[in-house]
Image 1: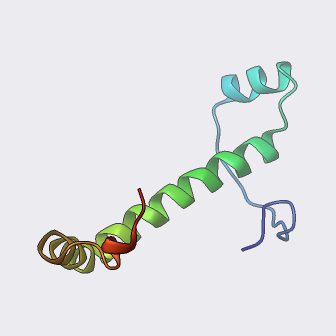
Image 2: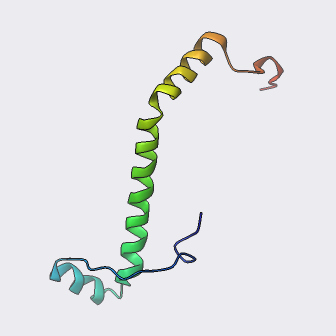
Length: 79
């Protein structure tokens, strides 16, 4: 997976309140970099949330199997 630094960039239009933009600029914030980073975090959070929802049946079956049979190779664990 490419990082944001390596990925090509594409211009988009955003509507952000003027007060927020003014304060961010006064603080010397790079708006593009900040929005890109925060949006990237939210996209990753939602991706994994959806992945867990989509795979919940398999996860439940696996957990039930571990509950009934124990961990594979557990007898070889030294901890």
